[in-house]
Length: 88
Image (cartoon, rainbow, N blue to C red):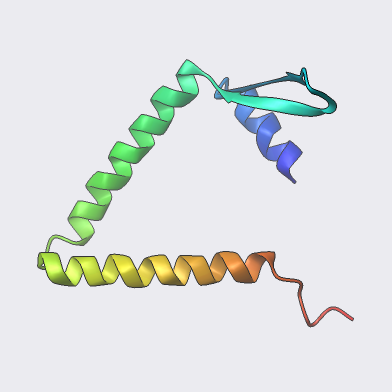
């Protein structure tokens, strides 16, 4: 799965892969200037979208929402990494 993601990023010149000089089995993944610029654009777009969504909330409510969403995201990440107990 990771290989496919990296293939796509590399095809769009967002990252480069090269052999790790310390470990022949490993590859180094480096962000390119194009990738760095694109990342900055995406972050700016997300900040604008977030500001629009939170515009009707005061600072305290916006902070609470960010905290709650962060906790939900952390739980989702833990769940995605945990073994699926339904698989037998």
